[in-house]
Image (cartoon, rainbow, N blue to C red):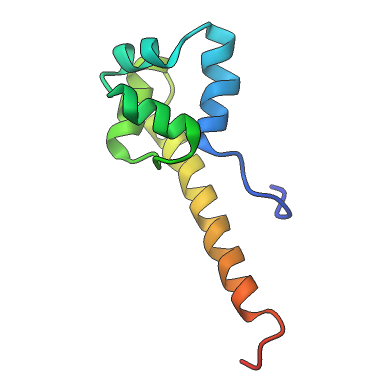
Length: 95
């Protein structure tokens, strides 16, 4: 079972810790290998840019992972945020 008391691992965190660092890849090298712009790669790493279908496809090409892997990571983060935003809004409310 996945932990529910913390934000799921963001795609950028996974990308850096499990792919870039172990493979010795820079964001620039990943951008070149993936066909993505450097701003997109750096944005994902910083958590400013969500992984969409185009980014997931580029990561798939560059890292021999599935695009669905990256989309699932993003979906888990977005789902967690939605659930916790609702929880904060309704906790202790009269609704």
